[in-house]
Structure formats: structure tokens, C-alpha cells
Image 1 (cartoon, rainbow, N blue to C red):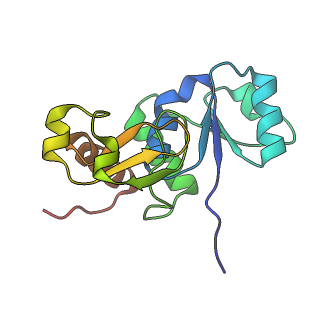
Image 2: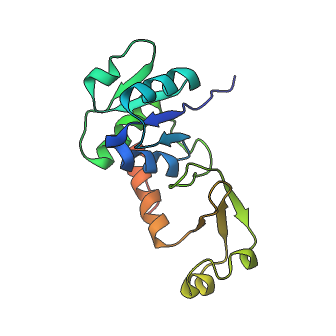
Length: 158
């Protein structure tokens, strides 16, 4: 039996959490233009779990909501992964900006779209299918990977 990973929608107070969940591979909607009623409606209509720090919003009828208790980003990530997560990635990382799926890209196709030092130092690139943003495995990604491992409680290789 296959377990479908949860899909989330995060309220305006949880933008950093939304980005981290996208890095972890979770489909996470984040749109600061949505008010509480629109968030609840969208969560209900799409079957997404509403992530919020607002007790009143979390208590709305007809939605599945999770009240995030921590104010610290690493603790928020750990909290959500404990409540809903798996021990490993649910899918490849998603675009931190638009939540789109990332696709492997030919190195030549991103020339001129990344800084020259990145072009010369990196061999593998991914491109967001939604917004076209280019990603690569630089030092920032190592920090993200480490942060997700810590949030999951996964031991690191030393």
C-alpha cells in the first residue's frame, strides 16, 4: 500500500516554513494575498492540511489544520515533519519560490542564467518547470540538507 504524502497550505505567518517544506519535497502552497477565509476554502477544496499559528483559523470546521506551536524555523520544520513526515524525502525538492516541480537541465541550457563562477564550478543543474528558476547543489544546498536531517532527527555521516 502506497502512502500519499500530505499536501500543505501555509498561512502568511509561515513563509519560511513553506520554503523549507518545499525543499523537503512537500507540495506546499503559500500565498500572502489569501485571507483566512480563502485559506480555509482552498484547504477544504484541495484536501490540503492548513498550517497556521492562528488558533482561531486552525479551529475552523471542515478543514484539516495543524497549529504550529514554535516560533523558531528549525523547530517548526521538526514539528511538522514529526506530525506528518516520513524519515526520508517524499519527492525531489520543489521550487522554493513557486512550489513547481524541478527537472534536470542540460548544463548548456542554463549558461547565462547563472553567475559565471557557478557555471564553472557546477556540473548539475535543475530548473523549475513553473517559473524557470535555476537550482544547483552549491554550499547553500548542503546547509539545507543538514537542516532537514536535523529536523528529521536523521543521523549524519561524519
